[in-house]
Length: 424
Image (cartoon, rainbow, N blue to C red):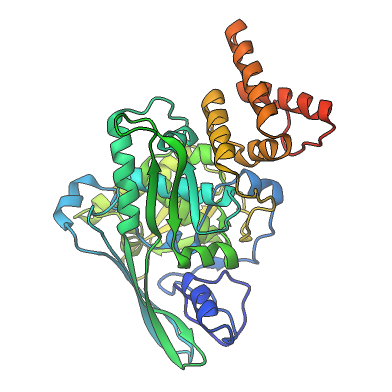
């Protein structure tokens, strides 16, 4: 969370700032991203938005990227129990004096999330943006469609149980933020408590069995809605596919660095401070450094495009500093998707789910939604039938590409224009 200042800035605003704008629209000024004064930072001009990169890139929220949210170390999960994750630092306040800010994450009834909950939150953010980043719902259809997003085509019953629990974990999180922002009119620093999600709904065609109807949705909190509508989410500079291929701590570090690299070409931070931000909950400093080194080297071995180099340095007072050098500049401009799919009918959502099942992928949701909206139910059913016939007759290496060709042929027959996806 960032503090309000009088001076205007082009830096991204925080959740607190957005909520403040909603509650008090007459407040002027935008916050500046606070500097980390513990080590010297090399900053350059704000990155230029690269549209092609942004379209290929995953997206995330600025605040959730910086502050700790999950416990990724299983050995320490039981030790800490239900104690909140706490992050605190000191930044320059409105009058120039130092101000302490604090971020606490309290778990709900199902405790803290781990690596699987981290991936699920990433999935939900991407899906919300694919649906236009608007409205009070994330329409996920079925849990299977969420697994398909990651390329997991044969989840077990245990995987489904874990995903349901992870959804409840995310719904249960309670964020308590001290000094979230400055309210000019009231002359006050504001503390705020908020949540990510509300209720979740699943739909089943019968009382018995695990089959689902593709109408499931998750309610988005008012704060998160305002983030999407007023600020948007920043581009990470790497694809969803690469994110899924990383280990849990590598995923977390990659998202954190993407946020920092949106305004820095080199990020330097004391190891103990970075460990609290990720978090790395090792007992001994040497173990912390070893874990951090392993995650950084993992990102380099996977050729994360935004990271060029990593090293440790010793500061003047003897403490260890982690140094990360930026590679390719992430498209740092926060933006919502340019193409927004209007909400589909229940039958349309059902067809969207069938397409995902037939092609074993939930990618290109906007494209398939456009086809459903413009062509209608009958032609989509006809195209799916042709795809099934083709797969029965021989080996179809790219069912998504074939379905695209079929739909474009049907569109030409009807004189309907379809654009936005090339036939692979």
